[in-house]
Image 1 (cartoon, rainbow, N blue to C red):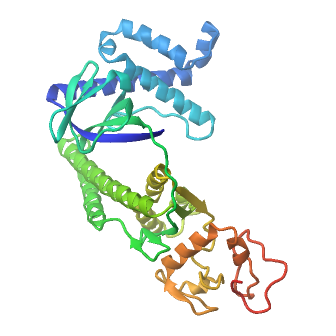
Image 2: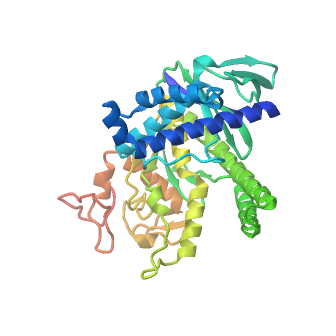
Image 3: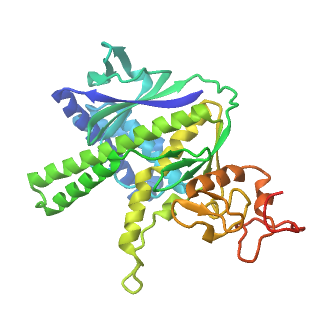
Length: 414
């Protein structure tokens, strides 16, 4: 049994779009009121009622609120209950240390609402269009770009810069087959987004760079417009559309690349990168300013533009569906280790693309050499191989202890 999401572009009428905004606004209000109640009034609530302030208690409060205000009762109760469940889950993640403290939802950012799957019906209209029936809204057309599979568990209506979309969360009966495909190591970088241990180099589409320049120009236009003016609002919408288009192109490339790899390989080995730390700002304080702030900002932008984490997430579930595995290894010294003799020397990395071992003379593309090391590091023998005795000028990998009896000759594999 696997869970999969299917997202489609909606084509609502003007009246339906008005209802969408009303539903999203009321759900956002319910979420923010419940958040305020948990933040400011939980002690008073527990003293007066002698019970905990949780989802069940707030669902009872919601029933009273709907009885008092007709414009809240006009919105589906399920959507409002789902907003309360989202808040309850957000607090559970916060207390478990998985997320930050919940923040209020904002108009223009959190325009979404959700139904349960049993309340929704889908029908086919023709080869390109289908329709979904939503409670208190009616039948809404959507572009049927791929077949819907499995049992619908819930349906989310959300708006982004490119319009309204519907997402079906489906439960699909699936048994993963036995995967006997070979393993591959992948090195992630900026010049080459992905480099495989087979020697292949893959990069995000070049059109992303052009859209990035247009998006930056649009953001500069926003800064020159007067706050509150219609021209500023138009400029903001243009910047949002460009940003959303850039994200869609990147996500499409990630899905296609991950699908191709999940079909070709049974095990994929990646470096366990701390992307959040790698993209931290270089800004400091007035007393101790950061070093090379502008250059670090450009590097951070280039790293985030590659979408490393998004690709990793997509690849993980595609491999799992086909019986494969995604493994992560320690990234220490993978770019400085010679994949031929095992010597670790920072001088061997002559440039971004060139690797020339100072000990055995092995030459290769630097990213390809790192990808081979990443694949080998997944094996149990890699620790012993990397732990061989090396000359004083060569370092061993962090946390890898050398064997008790070093070989008589210089470094190298057995």
